Length: 197
Image 1 (cartoon, one colour):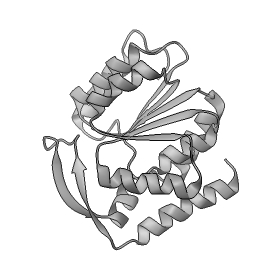
Image 2 (cartoon, one colour):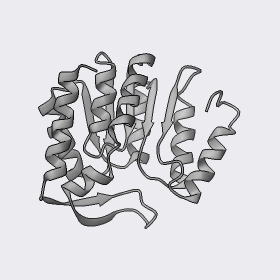
Image 3 (cartoon, one colour):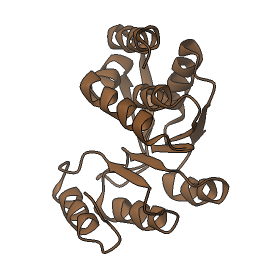
Image 4 (cartoon, one colour):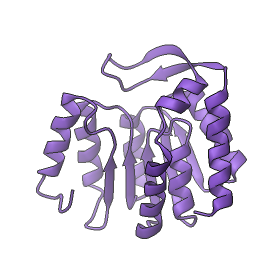
């Protein structure tokens, strides 16, 4: 990733870490039952819901190494991971899905400020949008960082598996988030079609 691009992304992150503004968050995938609404500061979201630099750099290197034609991300937040994935492979089409309209609006602003025109940002429920997206594209790299529940995680895995081949890479974040996520990860690892985990 070019240093100039990384500086732009990290400038967005620093700006949001300092923000005193509060937004209403719509959380569609929580252990609390979904469709939860609450107020949260932009700085808190930037601090707690985004990946540290070393992990987003790893995502960028994976994107660069694998060179997928299409990258899919479930769980945009403010889009820092999205931008690193896109920066790693500028020729890839990048589709990212976020359940919260207010969070997605900030991500879209970040994409625009940082010059990422190949990112297709969608808002809605993963369960509803994922089948539609998979009718359009066959993603070679998928980053799943949202709705950290056992049933949901296995559902995404099953849906994605039916649209994958031996070159598809699925990245599951927060696999130790809860007992349910640990269980889902064990089942994914042990699936007969998973060759490397």
